Amino acid sequence: MRVMRVRAAALAILVGLVGLPEVAPFAPARADAAVSIAYSLERLVGDSARVSVVRALERRSEWAVVGGSRRIVTYTRLRTLESVIGDGNGDVWVRTLGGVVERIGQQVSGEAAFELDQKSLVFLTRTVDGVWAVTGMGQGHFPVRAVKDGERTIERLASSRDVGALVMRKAQRDVAHARLVGQALGEAIALVRGAKREADAAPR
Image 1 (tube, rainbow, N blue to C red):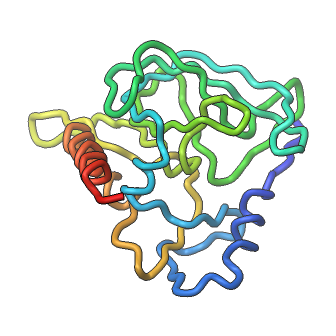
Image 2 (image 1 turned 180 degrees about the vertical axis):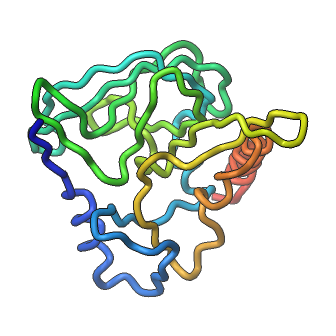
Image 3 (image 1 turned 60 degrees about the vertical axis):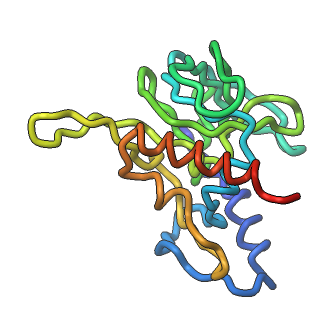
């Protein structure tokens, strides 16, 4: 299968870093990784119309024009198990960049990667063309893993498969990815709802 690695998003982020003061590394960069500005929890919540616990049920990939370029995208149907923020009832189709159509594949480093039948905490936003997408790409997708803790099994958040390298501004108070990964699902939901209450109570 012919595989084309798409790094336009990473390049755009790198270009955008030029001239940005007070930017410090948060994670070591890899040569093949996307580089993104790290989302704070406040920003991740603020930029999301929905936050839900979901299960991926099915997916399909196709060619589409996104941002003026023709590329492969994947639509995944997510079943809402619990709505955390926003109206997240029922199923929703979410578009991610990359996928396989016939014998052509495209992989976008830094993009969220859903596994079928997997439970996740996901932050969703509407794109300019009206479809649902993951806020911050891989930064807004947290697979839920069952972890043994003695005789108990606890559901904890894991990192999306390919978040890439993250950088943060020195003035930034937190990094959502660092705060949420490893948290028990219930504790993570409480953190997200707390960030939403703080944002709603802040003076405008």
